[in-house]
Length: 237
Ligand code: HEM
Image 1 (cartoon, rainbow, N blue to C red):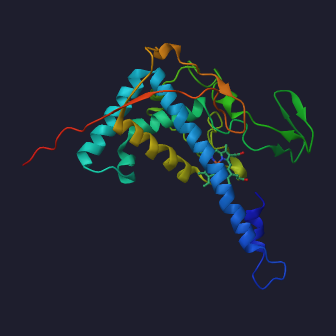
Image 2 (image 1 turned 45 degrees about the vertical axis):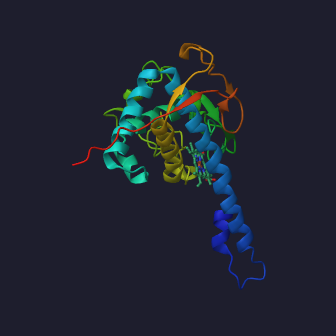
Image 3 (image 1 turned 135 degrees about the vertical axis):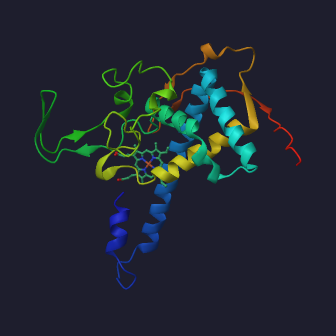
């Protein structure tokens, strides 16, 4: 996204000024890089929770407890939802929405695992495979948010076994905004509805096939039945 560099190197007194056009591009970057990735993460989080009802129940209990206690539903409550945060971390481990990050060019000759990587080689880092590497993760294919309990591993690109937002100078600049775009919709979906599979379908039979693309979504849309949740009446003092 060269637009970020160029916006600082041009001024309105400059005859070649393209500031508005570049700003437009930056905003377009935000929408294109930010919406598909966040939507994909919400989609996979719901899918994994439907497949693992214990996790759905725990997350839903937490969200309802916080919202009902606070008496309001807004982003200030999200910080209290520790388990929801674990669910999102685990979702991004198994389903990093941008699984191949951005391509890199090798700046100097180096070696990885006995392979010589010549200078100027294009290098693609597979965050999807790294997140499922049995050398670093116990039962890597299992959706288990508890693995992040008491763990210092986070999204900031310093734990190379977990890089859903990438790492280094090209790390995603939209981490906080991206997470908010996942946390809030998920909290609302968990708060307001009980989710059921249609036609007597069992959660064990859920199809988890992925569709290949820049963002890796579910191959087929998931159909769920939402049943409205009615909060308990508040006690009058
Ligand atoms: C759950 C949400 C998101 C995920 C998982 C995600 C993931 C990523 C990843 C993996 C990269 C490549 C990093 C690398 O190669 O090291 C990236 C780049 C980028 N992301 Fe995000 N992203 C998310 C949300 C957002 C949002 C909300 C925005 C904007 C507001 C955004 C803006 C960008 C931009 C502009 C880049 C390119 C950075 C560059 O060219 O150096 N992303 N993102």
